Length: 179
Ligand code: 5GP
Image 1 (cartoon, rainbow, N blue to C red):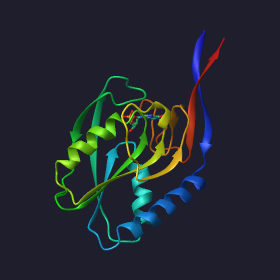
Image 2 (image 1 turned 135 degrees about the vertical axis):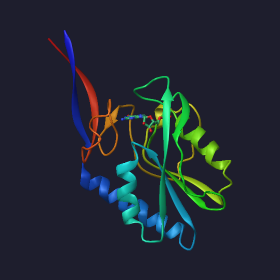
Image 3 (image 1 turned 45 degrees about the vertical axis):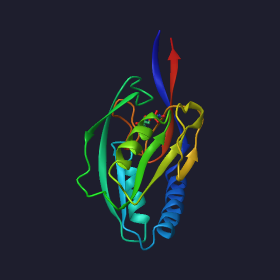
Image 4 (image 1 turned 90 degrees about the vertical axis):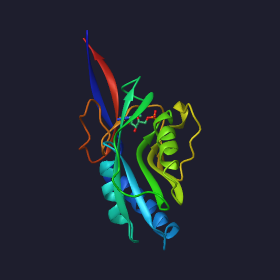
């Protein structure tokens, strides 16, 4: 008996684009006149961030932070280590963290603690996807597009073993047993 994976489309690219535009409009209003620095979490949020910042209509800078996780490697961060640091100044600026998905919340919880120590003027979280049923620590998501069930998803930046990030839509990845 072997197993393989099947992809099922959850959100097509047009629906994602509409939600990203709506988020960008809200962000543009909320941060008008403020020194906004968007920090994307590598690699999963790179594609989302690139669409989001292009839809933001106020001046915005962006940077990236890299996280490595130990523990459950497929679905969660477990213990978190920072592997790539943003080079931008953060003190006194309005930081908006951009994540692909909040699952257990462990990754973003430790990331927000790290960024808070940089003394920003404000610190908020934007996550494309929210998977609340798996949460292990409370996380306040200021901007999010889709609340999803307990399924593993890929595409639009999200991977399985580094694959599928380039899919334009978001798909569930399900194990399908055969023979
Ligand atoms: P958390 O710390 O919230 O459990 O995990 C967040 C990170 O785990 C995400 O940034 C992502 O890298 C990974 N992750 C959690 N759920 C999924 C999922 O359904 N699909 C993919 N591709 N990654 C996920």
